[in-house]
Image (tube, rainbow, N blue to C red; front, side, top):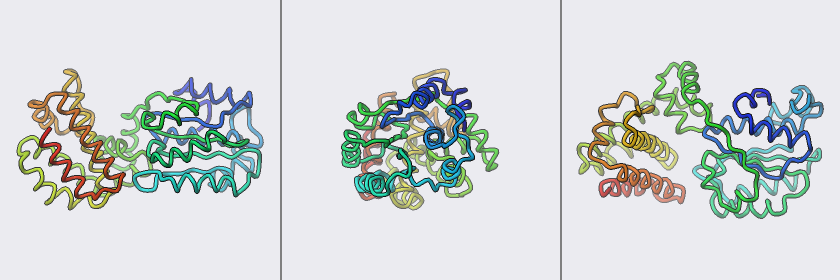
Length: 330
């Protein structure tokens, strides 16, 4: 990516970044928020590369100097990226990151770290980062990447400059991904909805497990719609046998959440056509026919609570069984 490419779709974001580089007034912390994390990460890497480049053409990194080559190969010691450890970013991860930044010693006059899915920081992790925000040190830059900025602590948001990215055309991405892996556009859209990284979405689409996951979500909705009294039995006999462990169950819950969100749109907008699970129009109609928008919102909230329980290390089986009871109650 280059700044001229970024400016074509994200004019305001590109202008803010370019001005900060040209005037040498780069802040100590930024929040990049948008609906597609890979694009946010690629932009963060462009920003860092421009700052590290030894021979930039204006704001564009040259791509040929030592620092640019080391950025491309992942060997620039003053640039760090961090991802969640499982379902969350833990306090120990933030403490280790800050320790690495303080111990390794900058080769130049700047250090940059990028935190993926920053909204997954635990409260303890966010508070550890907050202490660093209050006394960042010279030349240190944090970029927090998130698709859910509202989940960040208000104190974190208030101490960072927020750059909000315009929505990415998901249909175009899904078309590209489906052509790449020879799958349906529907499956590609679902993979992109659940897996924030392009490579992860691409990899899972080569796995029959994800195709089976699609089918199980449809079965879950059918049971919930037509035979809700059998929900717990379905969970024990089919769902939990497929979604094994915390990470797999989270994928299943996020797929079900995608169904619920599409159902809500279908319920409240008479002109809306669901963009996910597109072959299940009749099931959508049956699902919403005896449910109010309020009840669907409650179901989404129950799924969110189940995901929070997983992140708090509650037993996955107990978490989903509790969800089935919550869904039956409405």
